[in-house]
Length: 210
Image (cartoon, rainbow, N blue to C red; front, side):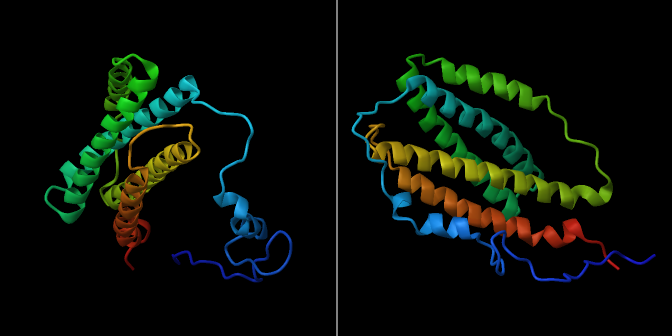
């Protein structure tokens, strides 16, 4: 039985507006080149924090962080003292630190110090009941590959969180003495490391010998 091969491209890929496609659409190129993307929105109206919306947004990120920690803890333990296991354990520590920071922001705007604990506890109970699917012996590399990919998506969410809070602070809406750029840089570095681990096992996860 012949193994499947990647079909060749019979014609070059073109962009929706014509011309060769180079990975970035013309619309995206125009948007990225626009000066408006780097400038705060000018408005004559003084804006203040919408406490309900902000707390809802932050709680959504807290809930996602619980799921990420469950996965990180499981992977770090299963890979013991390996470089991957040690790195994931460090990432888990950093996310727990971020949970405490986000939790303090939620408590400051919600006025109820028990809210964060209730959210983390309820989400944690649900996540802890999720069982890993049964795998064939050859599927463990695939499982690890997919788990790291899922975590990477969550890390982009963390990056988005800190960028959003930094923008609110820069626009004078959120007045907090926190170094958001430091958190952004930290997540960016972790994404590079995560991508390296993930791509290192891509071949064994998505191919077979022979």
